[in-house]
Image (tube, rainbow, N blue to C red):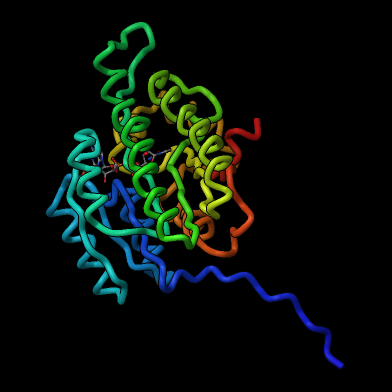
Length: 256
Ligand code: NAP
């Protein structure tokens, strides 16, 4: 008699619809491609219509299903109108984010408001809008927020950004408590420095690169494809009991 084996986890996303914000480039576009490759139908949202169109075309060419939803998350009323008009989703990769690097002593209220309007305010109300659709649809869902290692530690010239990502970590845990009864899971991914437009100026600075290399025990900065496996995992039924968690993708930075 053969031993009955437990079912292996499924990382597949067929039949799921995913909204990805910040999908015109960088981590968001890579995640949209990975979610589509895992079988999800993806909706790419950001401001740059031309980049969204090119990204969606590339995903379709690779065999995936993709649409675009041009929007500016800082213009929250119109962004929410667009999202509410796009139908219900099973997966949200709440990823649009910005930084205004600079010393704490020089930061202005305008810098603070600009970063918080995208990284916290928009993330909060987009998550709320998509959660409402998930609850109404009644089949659960997975929300993955792009936090950062700076949601867990501090970083040089990053007080506002660090504060915004710590806020996202708190939001994620509190959402997980309220949405668990609807089987809506809420988690973060927390990248270290990844080569994208966001980090280009920092990664061209040799002094900052010395600091970064001294902190990453695996000895290298990240590529966008280092982030996407965790996004697909958290979106999938393989992560069915994971909520309120943070996946550190930081090469050991926060290990100490
Ligand atoms: P990126 O290449 O600059 O991409 C940012 C994305 O956000 C773009 O698609 C951009 O699209 C979109 N976006 C920015 N402002 C927006 C707005 N007002 N409305 C709609 N979309 C907007 O940066 P990235 O590195 O991929 O960053 C993605 C996320 O990862 C961010 O939340 C960031 O904080 C986080 N993160 C990045 C790193 C890293 O080292 N790169 C590390 C930790 C966390 P449009 O310009 O077309 O609108």
